Length: 270
Image 1 (spheres, rainbow, N blue to C red):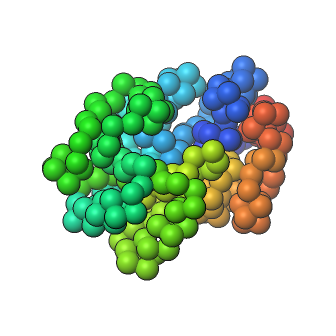
Image 2: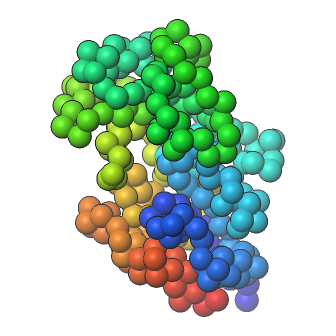
């Protein structure tokens, strides 16, 4: 009897990736076995495609990928699959920049798929964002942005982060969703309201005709909440935040202990 395939959705940072941002040989081996057994493996990450493509290639994937927490979904190897790009309205972006300037924030960055726009010059942040060699433009975003944007990042002083988030919730709740990055970064990430990884995963699962009960999704942070709730098996990493462990119906070892691989090996009998 042929077993029905599972769709396996992998978050990268803190989940599939070890703390040094590599995939362990054991994880690679188990994922490769899962694919050989007919299961479908995809990546669902907050990262842009340019800084997740090395992992996509390393796992030899041939599936659509969810980037920017669902704001951009496409198939790197099949243009006919379509691409789904859900953007922030440029006027809202400009209002947010005005507020950022009033509060003397460190910087505001805008990303349009794989192009990065910096409001102010910033060596340290440019270094962080240079993975995948994006086109980087520096200067007043209100002048430089000609298109609606995928995502905005606000880099602020630690004590300002909550103030700015309150402003976003009060003024722009209808149109934006925001979350803060994990330490050490005091960064607020903003995407279009209603976007999350589950929305991207839904597009992929309907393409492969796989019902949610045959989806296994792994994550560790607040941007994985919807995806783990949507999946029949929502697996929280051992290192996941408490809130995520609360919505997950399964748990595994930490990202340093090959949690993804252990779970897949046991559950799929690899």
